[in-house]
Structures are given as C-alpha cells and as structure tokens.
Length: 104
Image (cartoon, rainbow, N blue to C red; front, top):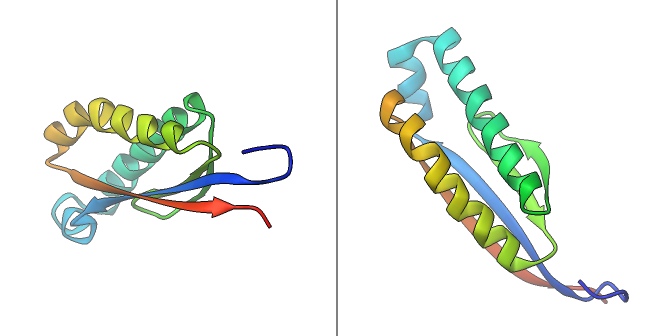
C-alpha cells in the first residue's frame, strides 16, 4: 500500500470443512484442541507473511494483508503446513482470498 493509503488489500478466510461433523465424531474436547492448534499454526503463518489475523472464526481465521502476494504466499504455506496435520485428523480445510483496491 502506498503512503496515501492506496493499494490492493487482501482478505484471507480459512474454514475447516465439515467441522460440525468432526466435532460430533471426535467430541468437543478433541475438536476444540484441534481447532486451537489449527488457528495457532495459521496465525503464525499469517504473521510470518506480514499479515494480521483480524479474528478467529471458531474453525478458521480471517486475516488481512497489505500486499496480495503476501496473502497468496501465506495460503500456500498454510496448505503445506497443514497437510500432515489434516491427514492425521481426517481434516480438510479451505481458504478464500479476496482482493480489493484500498484508498480514497
């Protein structure tokens, strides 16, 4: 983003697919621990790519990036980092990225 506040803002959303069913199969305590670990890992990757976690969504996060490339790189790193965890927990997640011009 430029000094005058113009640029491309990127918003990244993540979501664990079937989180309600996962909670039913695994139970609340196991699901809560899994979701917290997932959120911590994603938060670390957002920060490592110059982003900000706006809020946790229970089974995902909402994050923002000033540069769209940072958001895309974060999502790619999330895929790699969560692949092993997701396979062990039978967890699938998805991410959506939205880009918009920022500024007056």
